[in-house]
Length: 259
Image (tube, rainbow, N blue to C red):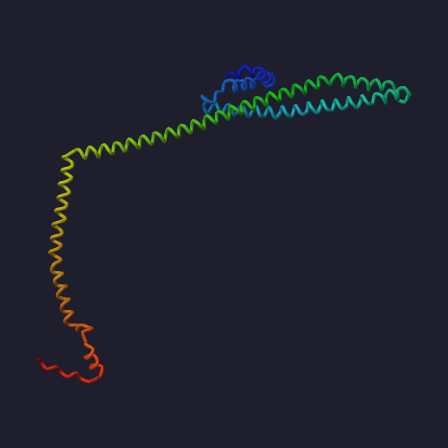
């Protein structure tokens, strides 16, 4: 990768403090290719990211300590500088021992001499923390790129499977159509089917004839029963109005003479 050389200083910085881990981080950044990496490569990258994130957390705590040390020392020096005027007045007035003032001056000079070192340590801690932050960002980006590539690959695989299934279905349908076309073009097979249909039709016709023969006596008997029933029961509604009046009067109806 083009970034490989750009991580040289960072790798040396990390290696200086953590030895083999520094080289591991540098290699993880320089050699990882999301487009060709395997799942095992991703696992190693994720593990390196976790280790680096832990270093970043530690470096932040170390930087906070160094910064607080610098601030405390700067405040101490500032206060002591303010106190020098008072001490000078007291020394001139003879209210304080010269040895005490000498001790105070020694401590102030020592603190001023130590301040640049403390500031440099703070700067180094910040630089180290910033470099680790860059590494974490780079590893996170690579991990995201790998996951994006993996997602695209899975989508491509799913699409390829769908296309394969579609083509298999098309081939099956083509095979079925070819089989039906072959059957249609085969006169021997078609003739056999036609003859079989005619045989079944003849069998059905014969069964119908037999059924009609058996049904005929049943129909005749039903007709006879209907005639007998109609004779035994007088037809209703045939009574004339005159006959009805005579019947309702309670008088017997005289018999009619034959004409």
